[in-house]
Length: 143
Image 1 (cartoon, helix red, strand yellow):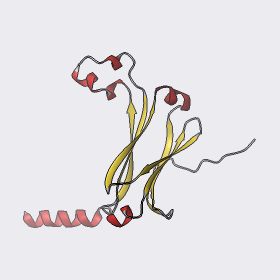
Image 2: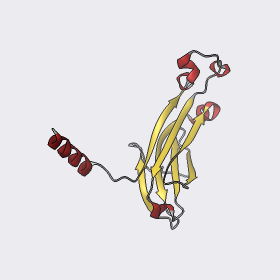
Image 3: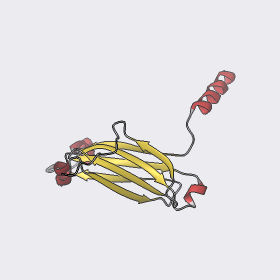
Image 4: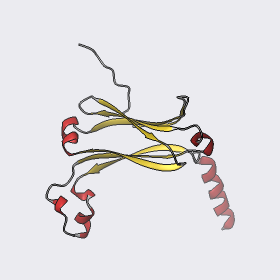
């Protein structure tokens, strides 16, 4: 039994990605996002619950990269075909940040269409990158 476990661990370690990464998780936000919805406690926000989307950018970088003052860049394309770039300074090897698109801003932009996250070092080199499956660079046509 121990030998099977060791083989499984060896196979898993050989097939897994490196320990350093940047990732993005997309969450939909509505009344189910409020804890009071699940536990049945009074909450004035239940009368007008938030609506929108949230992106959680998470990273893990080695000490060598942390020493080069890296920054996490989140590029977002919205359904109204506008773009936004958000920068998060990286001060810890393992951390996360949120980007929230709620309520009137969500209604105005129509939501998040696609996104790309990258970790850039001080000299502008991309250390790690994560793209949504629909990510393409937006082509702008001037009138």
